[in-house]
Length: 579
Image (cartoon, rainbow, N blue to C red; front, top):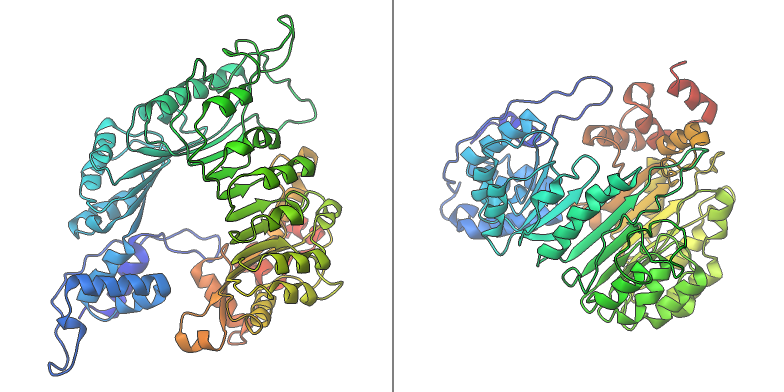
């Protein structure tokens, strides 16, 4: 049997850098290999795991990993055989940062330990040169199904390896740092998903992306998901006019991408040809077609397979709505209520999930139209101004009507206001009348003068306890205090932006993993901005197992998680190093 301390060291250091509790340096334990020995039953006369086949043990551990990852980690401490079986299950997902030498060393050890065939999802990131052994490592991942690629480049041998298996799907993310990657994937048959998120100052900047992007869209036959965010950087007090030159993709003469299943357009420089030949506008000089580019997309693309539609212009959505016969999922981050209502009433398919900023977007009648199929509903917008945010909240009367009209909902997320100086128990009671509710996500306001009670780890336990006692189906609860402003929202509010970012809090509450705790309706709460070690410390403090001492040594996130938002002036002093 392998020593417990050694197994623990290998598990904790094999893939992640060690957590840090303060501003000290991260430490990275050296990878250690443990030889596998055959399991022997303690009592040969009784049933034992040692008598099961490898495949059956792996099936058991896979179910355990899904239900309780900590139980899988505990199994690793039993013996070297279970350690190796569990490692195979944990290696379903593997991340490689080519900028990290430690990550490369771990990959080499994984290969030596024959863990690579277990990998199902591979994520590759980083801006430096790819290691020469990476292609050979990928070839050993015989169970590979999905590759998420955000590294700056990808080699032809790696692309050939991915394309040699019809089961392997390539998902590529393009940013300002990796825009040259577009040319590498032209013609790839493995590419199924492409995300382009870049900013541009000039027409030339944008066309350096849109021209190779067009080549990719026309040459990759298996592309099914496309996300576009081609935007100009946040403007200061003096805004520069967009270029008059056409800088979009430029489909013309019947050109179009393969039939898409998912489309997201956060920002795109739509082109057009003015009716007046002498007309002057933006993004129009050199547009190769007639009329509006939106109309070309609507009329030429094959929309019959589109199931997910996100962040698109409400004008574009209205133009294409009647062609979306397979649509199931819709997400609008902004909109115009009159046109949005028409979209939800006119869409010919039955929607399964809707994500909108306000209830006015779909309207109660629009939601009722999809009541039989709707399983997920999110209604929430960014807290740009507290007055605007409060006005967008759903009233208790409308919430009651919504819950009665949509009994099939399993997943709900809404913005919610406190009840003066208390939690909104009346609103919570309405939400838990949903008979099949499994997941609930709530956003509370933060504002410049944070209302009480504060959302902390202790209050998150209180809210999860309150809800779990009243809803037997609820298994996941996610609570937010604040919705940080997007960077660049106002250059004159940089301190306010930093304050809202650092004083916002999120807590994830899930049923306890132990069956006896779960049977009592107990939840385990964690703050995703804290390390595992700090989450354990916070838990001990909340449960009275550890005394609350000076919190400053553990950072702002730890203090906010336990005590709530820091007063603005005190935070300013901390931020600017006056304390």
